[in-house]
Length: 218
Image (cartoon, rainbow, N blue to C red; front, side, top):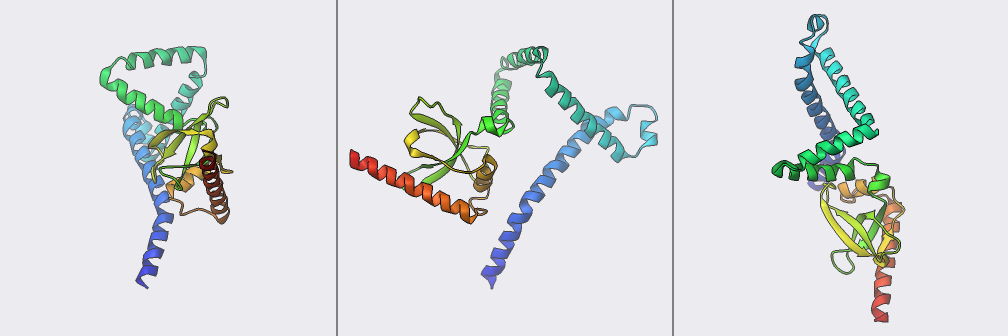
């Protein structure tokens, strides 16, 4: 009975945790916007007397989104691209700030960019030892090159991991969307469907057979 209650509790925790974390992040973001922009709005005459505090925060939040959208629009123009390139070059000349800025930019480029260009495929490959298989994402693939760049994320935090160069013959592309692959990694495979488990097993068997065949040829 105790084991069943423990299993039920862990299942409920797994269901509630993503919602709780999302709500916490949104609330912290809300507090940051309120603390940053509300003092500026309060300087507008008669605005604080006419509207309650939550309306001021809502206006601040909408203004923040509008400004960020304008920045994004500006970066698509030639003038905007040139301006931000100058800013980046200036920041990259500052020793300590350069390290933080470069790392943050690289992470943002991968995880905030279009997944179709950041992660190309979900793949299965043999790692870290024979007959042990890992799930990863192809980040760069040149058809004429025998090696494929594969990002191996960690569980449950997929923003950290390793860049591996894997022989093309040792990689199997899985019929999974990028979002499905990320979900499997974050959950540690606990949300895997029967269909996903089936083709993962088939891919593992194919890789194992290919390795055995290569060993025979040697």
